[in-house]
Amino acid sequence: MRNTWLVIKREYLERVRQRSFIVLTLLLPAIMIGAFVIPAKLSRMKSSTMKRLVVVTSTPHFGEIVRQQLLAASKPDDEAIGPNKDKEKEDDFEDKPGRDYSIEVDANATEAERTALRNRVNSGDIDGFLWLSDDAVAARKVMYYGRESGGFLEKSWLSEQLDRSILLQELAQRGVSGAQVDRLLKPVKLETMRVEGGKETKANDRGMFFTIFAMVMLLYTAVIFYGVSVMRAVLEEKNSRVMEVLLSSATSTELMAGKLIGVGAVGLTQIAIWIVMAGTYALPALAASASTGEIRIAPLTLAAFALFFLLGYLLFSSIYAAIGAVITSEQEGQQLQFIIVLPLIISVFMMGPVMRAPDAPIAVWTSMVPFFSPVLMYLRIAVQPPPVWQIALSLLLLVGTIAGILVLCARIYRIGILMYGKRPTLPEIVKWLKYAKG
Image (cartoon, rainbow, N blue to C red; front, top):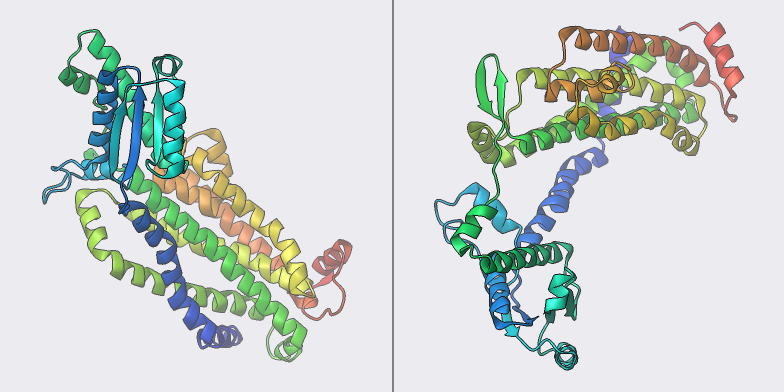
């Protein structure tokens, strides 16, 4: 035990004192914030230039309907931007185009007029025009001509407003008033309530999804990143032949356990620092979300995350350590790394089906497989806690698999770290497992 502790201390202090650890710990949160916050802010910024459009229709009345609809839909609701703004209205406004429009109605839907408007677009007099002749509306095929095609969101917004304008006209022709149309087209808001322990709480599926997704991706990236660190640590000492000195005073099992725990402690330290930094930055928003019920994490979910994170790390890191003992260069490790990462990739792809139907047979049985359970069983617990026996069986299989892999890896580790120059073949590795003693 003393030797293991010495290895843990050496691995931990050696990596924590490196400049790369300090730089990565401070720089990565800044990069993540820049990658997510800055594009979101830019997408919400309103363009300073006004877009000049011409709406070409066969009748002035329909052209005015389209004009009013586009102008009304592109402007924020006064109530939505006031001091007592409604969150739903605010979200609706964020989906609107980030620019103002100047719209002109043209009731001359002829080919000569289309040519003239093209010339106006080329000269820069207007930015574009919508061709809404009677034939185009009847065929539901509207053309837009412009100097720029517009973004995906803007085109989607234009299409939605044109659909509504056409519907307004057709209903008006049938004697339906504008107020009645607004009432008929008002979307239905569905609220979900979660029933737990005889109590009803307002569920927020979007908040729950992003919370679970963030935790699962943290588990996924941490296992991969720090598992590779274990492999590199073993490979570096193997190539420098430091292991020959270390094995004179410690067993291979003690060395491997020390590396797993030492490098893992470095990763946990780094993740803890990031969580504290993120929590400090987002504390007001988190407190507000928790008070309104938008983000609600059950204690069982937090405990499951910590447990499956540690077990998942031990499982995959022990395999990484064994690969580090077998290979002779990092390039060989990169070739074999895909085999280890594959179960995690499959787990991430299975997240959607498991979230939609956590009690489906495929979700139940895949969450029992030890290589999938660190992600999928945790996901099931977060979405809808399964029966206790399923959680217990998953943990039992996971711990048993870790114990078995550790025994096998200790044997590979004992001989593999002393092999140089040539990567062993599969039959040779089988011989190591048969004759080596951990």
